[in-house]
Image 1: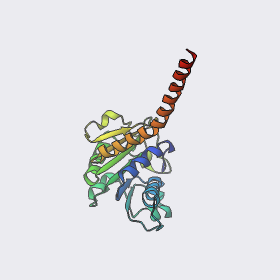
Image 2: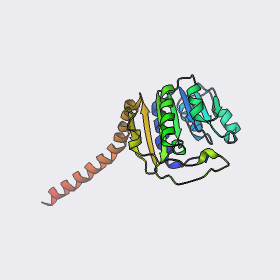
Image 3: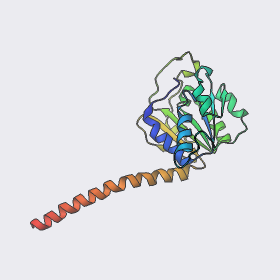
Image 4: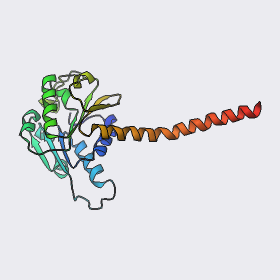
Length: 217
């Protein structure tokens, strides 16, 4: 399908924002959701007041040209039509971030590894997301590239050193690249910041109980 489930949006957008890339390559753009969200939160979120005065490069790759709409032409700088396995080795641009969102399950294991390696040759960082449950599915929307071919697990990424996984109940989300330590540190810091108010409330609660017991005794 030219779309993907919405229960991974928070995690993926957070990774994109924390990476803060100037040049993005979105492989398998589909409906254009991640190009759109990248443009919004990297260009419009904050103090930027020049609407549509894009300062970042967002390119896309799409194997099925019928998915492309005027929305894509507004959001993306360039869209390369064709098989990513053939297109990526021909690209000369160096990207700060490459997106492989719900793509590699449509490839064999060997094809997927080849694509990941090629992406890391032109991209400093790579975000991969693939469903944890992969069912047999033939082509849809008349697109032969939509067929599912392989279910990816954490062990299949063992050869890539600079990486970490982001918890999600429905998707296996893997971040690979030079900025992995920095981005992971930012995620941990954010989670601690979110948890601290809860810990503070818990401490106050137990302190109140302890004081009440002292008063009773």
